[in-house]
Image (tube, rainbow, N blue to C red; front, top):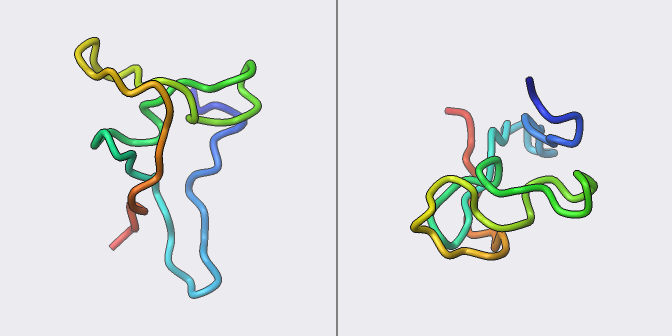
Length: 66
């Protein structure tokens, strides 16, 4: 089940559809934990891999529907 705070998919003003965002650690925003009980979707530490030591989502790119 998708989180009610999940902002994806999102449509930009130019019509492009953003499916997710990539973090500087290489993982997706949806693979990061919510902070403050879900009020800030995917901005916490990376939960994908126990070997990833990313503590906070840092935006690096949009994942756009092609």
